[in-house]
Image (cartoon, rainbow, N blue to C red; front, top):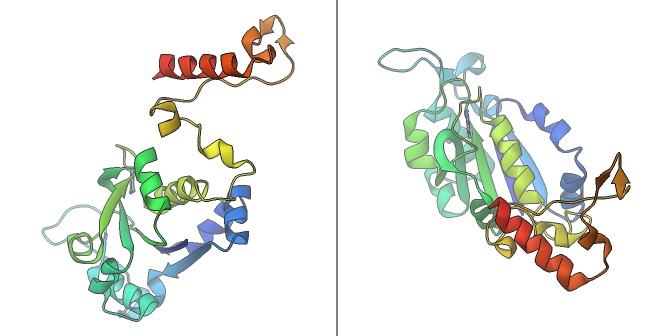
Length: 222
Ligand code: 6GU
């Protein structure tokens, strides 16, 4: 998979890329790329945003800037990029990211993530350049960068080889294997800590009973 992130702050992602599962994904041949809107603005002085028509607080990412950045990256008409790959605008009003959407995105060969800033995007970016709008929850962040990292984190860990043990991504919270319910509880050594004991079934060695217990616990939390 190839993920391109359009942002004013590409350097923020250096920290994100130090995560083990992200490094694993990159070592497996997956690729994260960055485009700084500022490198492609057709305006003098590096301007990328502007005050909203009609007045009001904040600044809005300009449509001509997003258009130029997409055109520079893909060497094609910016409005045609979304026919080739999903172009996802990160915006609080978008489709809420959940396990189903993460699976959907993880199956794509290539993704483009557009981060907005300040008050977000000129609506024409959403209408004519993006194919999707995604939100990570019903609250407002100062920009799309953290949301882009959340999307990348969740998507990359679904890719084969990203996790140390591939089973981790199958039977986990909200997965089909657990009928969409949260994951069952986990315990590790010591088996007894201050009298807080591990459920005996987990120490029993009866794999079928353990499997049933975990499913039941998952359902109870669902
Ligand atoms: Cl994707 N962007 C911003 N700015 N705020 C958000 C969000 C995205 N998702 C939840 N809040």
